[in-house]
Image 1 (cartoon, rainbow, N blue to C red):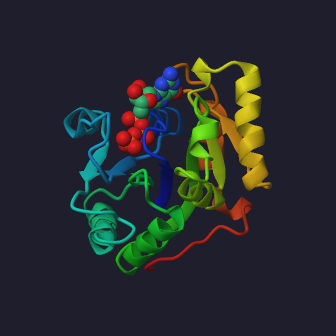
Image 2: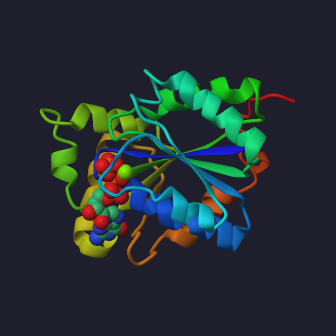
Length: 215
Ligand SMILES: Nc1nc2c(ncn2[C@@H]2O[C@H](COP(=O)(O)OP(=O)(O)OP(=O)(O)O)[C@@H](O)[C@H]2O)c(=O)[nH]1
Ligand SMILES: [Mg+2]
């Protein structure tokens, strides 16, 4: 059961991407997909609609899955495995969570489920790079989130021009030199082919991928 985090700062486009991505992974790759959402964001996830398309949705409230409700998160993963046995679990943490802590919390579910910690996708909103990386504002948190990314998905590229996209990537590279970028738009679907291939790649081809879990 592969756990894929869709992380990133508040409003970066996590839920919108998660909804489109979950459909693509189910339809194009034939994966059984579950979603775990840790907040009441701008766009609600309509569990009923998603479940009609054969997915399972769990909504965890009452705190952050990387700290206050980490054990609820771990139990939710175990339960999902027992009841639904998904191939992929897409997780949306809150916009202020640190992906490395969410990973640790997910690994706690490995006592009751064979958990593979998949790639961490961190969204970076291409429409406001300067504000996001301003160290007087949210820069420290955003930089910390980006440092945990396996893939930086530069989001909302449908509303920026090529120069602005380039500037956003240059700004991220300055703080995270080795970042792997995929420019994406959840409106047009740009970048989704690349993202889907990257997320569904066989983990055996990525030797540093963490695999933990019950046998
Ligand atoms: N133009 C454009 N707008 C987008 C895209 N993705 C998301 N948005 C918009 O950005 C806003 C925030 O999107 P959400 O998907 O709710 O972002 P989020 O990261 O889940 O937000 P929180 O959960 O509140 O942190 C919404 O108004 C979306 O419609 C995109 O690819 N292109
Ligand atoms: Mg959201």
